[in-house]
Length: 371
Image (spheres, rainbow, N blue to C red):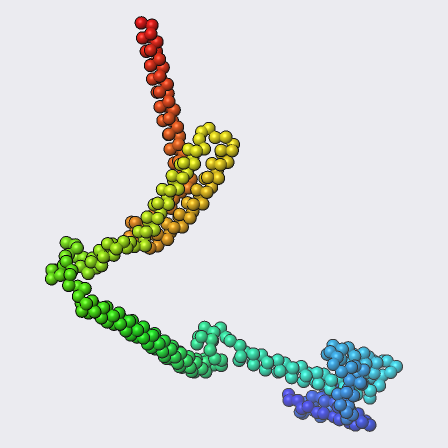
């Protein structure tokens, strides 16, 4: 059996009544038809969305739930089948159309909002650094992998060009600096050569003048070879001769003078503190103890000064084995104490022996007198 859809429409004032039904193709009458849909429509349409909101008694910008709730409340009041006193099909049709207009407008707004959010997300995704992009190409560029690769190649070319320019600039600066150094060195050497030549000319002029005056005629070694000052063939004769001349004229190197000064100073300090200890004597009273403490403090200060002089000596001494160690003031004081105690002990022993000898001599005299 085949069915045919039949639509019946009738206009009542400005309302349209629409009825659709499925009718068998071989049916003789329409009494056996099955009505599937029946709807009232109106040719009245609201002017704009504002009128639709006013008809639904809603403000603009309300939510979809508010629209649905308002439509249900109005449908209960104005639907023809609601049984309400205010039921009116005309008003209900207007409310229904206003509801559809508002719902469609809200759907369009939601769709446009979603589309804008998607576009913003796409923009952010295109600009954001991806994980693979960050790992590849040193994080340079954006877009597809091929685009990022081209951008990275261009970046490497630019970076290499900058490095080459910086290297060439450094090379030029270094060459200029070396040129200035070499120029200063040449000037210094030329000045030194001029000074040396001037001194040599001066010495030569003095020698020639002395020879012209006859100052060299009465020399004891005239016409004889120079005497060698050293039998060692590994020593330069000129250097040895110069050193001998300096020694003969009383010249001494700085480190030898400092070494001699240090030795003389420590010997003087030792003699001074030894004499002070002997002067204090034993046993010591409270006043003598204070005096001895002052002497020890002064000795410590002098030792500190001497140790600084030792530091100066160690900086200029040419031989490592000739360097000196610092003096310890406490050890020196203890050594003086030991010497004093040894002296006192020897002195007491000598006095005891002398007393015994005198006693024996007295006994001998007494025996002689008795006999």
